[in-house]
Structure formats: C-alpha cells, structure tokens
Amino acid sequence: LIVDINEGFQPQTEESLNYLKQFKTPFIVAATKVDRIMGWAPHPEAFFLTSFSQQPKRTQDEVEEKLYKIVGQLGQAGINADRYDRVDDYTKKITIVPISSTTGEGFPELLMLLTGISQKFLKDRLEVEKGTGKGTVLEVKEFKGLGATIDVVVYDGEIKKGDTLVIGGEKTVITKVKAMMKPKPLHDIRVEKQFENVDLVTAADGVKISAPGLDKVIAGSPLRAVRNDKEIEKAKQEVEKEMDEVVIETDHDGALLKADTLGSLEALIKSFKGMVNVRKANVGTVTKSDVMEMKAHDDPIIFAFGVKVSPDIKKLAQDNNVALFDSNVIYKLIDEHNKWKQDATNRAHEATLRKVTRPGRIRVLPGYVFRQSKPAVFGVEVLKGIVRTGYRLHKKGKVVGEIKELQMEGNNVSEIKTGDKAAVSMEDVTIGKQVLEGDILDNFIVEHHKAELEKVKHKLTPEERELIAENQEK
Image 1 (cartoon, rainbow, N blue to C red):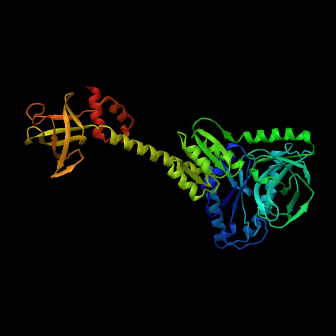
Image 2 (cartoon, rainbow, N blue to C red):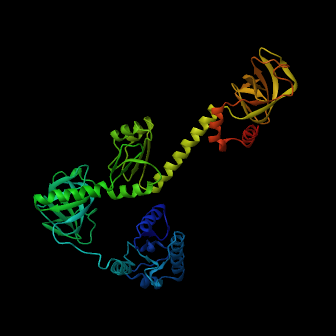
Image 3 (tube, one colour):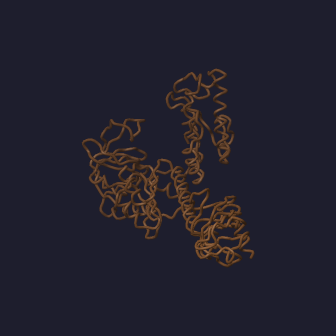
C-alpha cells in the first residue's frame, strides 16, 4: 500500500485499504517520497536505516512525526502498525517501510520484507502448473506496425508462438499468437517502448502479444493458451465463467456501471452493493446507445469509473435526463451520487410543499373590515404557518371560502407568514355572517394533502408542525 509520507492518507488510500481489509490480504505500507522531507541527504539504494542514521536530527524528527501520523491513520482504521524495525510480530502488526522511488533508499528492506511475508503467508500455496499458459490481460493497446496488442501477465504454464488463445471480450475472442515481445529486464511492460521478440514465455512473465482480433479483448479479462481443438471449448467455458462472475446483465430497473477493466468493474460492483440496484455492469466507455437505453428506464443512472466520457455523451445524458457520474476514484462516484440523490429528494420535497396546502392560522383583525362582501376585504394577522392565495379557510371544521388576493402595504403578494399583517380578499364571504371580526381561521387541508405533508414534515416550520399536531388531536 503506497502512501506519500508527506501527504499521509488520501481518499484513494482509504479506498485501497478497505479492499485489503475486505479480502483479508496481508500487506506492507511503503511510505514513499522520504527524500522530499526537508533536509534529507540522499544515499542512493541504501538501506533506510543506514540512510536515516546519517540524517540531521531535525530531519530524523520530521520523518518520525510523519510516520506516526500514518500509524495513527492506520489505527483509526483498526490496524496496528509501526516502522518495520520496531515490529516484533509480523502476523499481528503491519510494517511501514519509508522509501524513495527516486533514490532507491529503503528498497532493500521493502523487497526483503515482501519476500519474508510471502514465505510466511503463501508457503505451500504457490504452485506453477506445467502445460499451456494462463494469464490476465493488463491492457489493450495499439502498437505501431502491429495494430491492437495485449499486455499480459502469465501466472501459470507457458505460451508459445503459434498457440491458440482464448480471451475474454465482448464475446470470447479465439485467435492465434502471431508474435510475442518482452520488455527489457526490470522494465514495466505497460510503459516500455523497446521490446525483444521471443517464441516462449512462462510464469510469471509479462509479455506483449500480437494476434488478429485483439481489439475486441477487454482489459482485465482472463486468457488461456491451448494447442489442440479439443481444449478450445473447455478453455472457452473457463473464460466465460470468469467473465460472467463480474459482468452483469439483467432485465430489472437499475443503474448501469461502466469501468476500464474487469478488476475495476469488480471493485465498483462491490462498492455499490446494497447502495444502488444494478441493471447492467460491463467494461468499456459510455456510448450513445448506453445513454438512450438508460433513458427508457425508471432509474436512468450511469456510473463510469476510470473511463473517459466525451463532452458529447455528457450533453446527450443531460438532455435526456440521464444522471451520469464519472470519476477515477470510487468514493467520488459515491459522494456525487449521494449528493445528487439528496438534491433530488430536496427538489421533490420542495415541489410537494409548493403543490399542497400547508398549515396556517390567521386572526381577523377587529376594525379592519374594508368591504363586507362581493368580495369581502378585511385585515388579518398570521398567527402560525403560511397562508397563500388559492387556499381555502375553515372555522372549526367548516369551510368559509377561498382566498382570492393578498395585499401587504398596497402590493399584491402570493403568500404571508407568521407575524405578517395583510389585507385578504375572499369571494362568497360576508363579514358578520360566515366570518366575524376577531375570528380564528385555519387553512383547510384535504386528506391526500395531509398524507403528503407527513412525508415532508421535517421540511415544515415548528409552527406548521404544531398546527398539524393540534388538528390530529381534535
């Protein structure tokens, strides 16, 4: 688990840590960029402790302070950890190794500890099978002069030039190895540009493979090598079974998940488990057909993890009311979705509050009758809640009429609230008959509006909630 010693835990670190804990995977923390600490004097490729002992006291103190910050962050996640030389039981404590990727400091200890822990936890579990190869596709890339190629890690057996390959894709890809190329020793296959041609690779080689039809392969998918036609069907079943364990396609409503690799897709599915219903989950970028397909469903949401989404697709989604979230960090997708969901809920609640009759109570002010009838115009004070034009008022359960207009200081208004005084205009009301000076009138709320108000009760003012409680008691 790589942590910048100067920055400490980042959201991606917490995300990775959660997966390590979820799968109960033993791990080491590499606290990188130790050479960036102020005053650090580099000693290329040295043991960390050797280099550390030759640093100024002030620099040593700062290293310790930053390390203990990481120890504390791991502690908050329920993990005991310490600097590697202070750990006495590697099965109970996680080791932290300060390193520099630039100078190579700390790498001797890191490799030694990785070897030791691997021996401890993987003894009798690591076995290289003989026979045809098995591997995992890291990336699918265009390579000058060869077209689509795949970068593969072989974890079992061997692959020869001319072998038939069965590989996971949109549909299972069956093809023959045309060429294989290995990077220089200690170079990363994903970034290396200089390769040497080989006729044979074995576990655990990294290899670039050229073959027809590789543009249909999905990154992260399984690969099997076979040498006769009888093995093809068995290999195909194995590959498709592995693909089916990750790729989802159902008929029910739910979100669409898209990721750049099968591994990313699997992580995405696990993260969203129990949070959202998933209709489909597959590898690849978001397409126009994805958006139009989701538009037709009740839950039009697309999550894109680690894939580029073009501005045209984003606009298409927006124009068709399809919620599209894209990020390279899963927690951001979750946060953005939660915020969107909360905003949508708030908008729905606000729409409900605009649609229904809200609780309100007024008092007819004595001496402020401006017109007795046709329409009756009189002064009122809002005692509690909200009163709007179009609301009907009742007195002790009997409807007296509907508010036609409201005026405050000579200006028409659509609503008045607690403490406001205004002139009210009502048709079909005669002052002295249905309404008397000093009367207390409440908003008349129909039954289905009462049910809607219960759903958004938390959005009402305390006075409105009091009025609802009073009416329930009557």
